[in-house]
Image 1 (cartoon, rainbow, N blue to C red):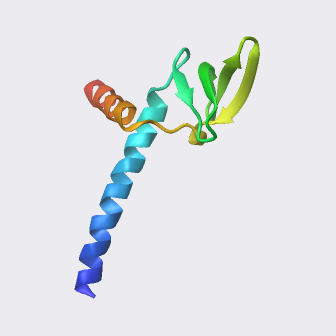
Image 2: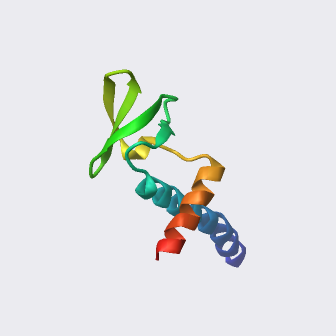
Length: 88
């Protein structure tokens, strides 16, 4: 049972850290930033709401997407963490 506990802690901690990095990345996004959604849609953020982004995907074509559908690349996640750590 002790081995299971140790094994689980090695699996849960990295997952929690990754989720924290993704959250910081999303919080750092703002108007003008280019993003890719989980569905593969490329666009530029034109508005930020509490739980969503307004994304321009073509000239005069805007969609509203849930913030949870935007994921960073590994490089973007690290950059967001550095920026937020510098602000705290």
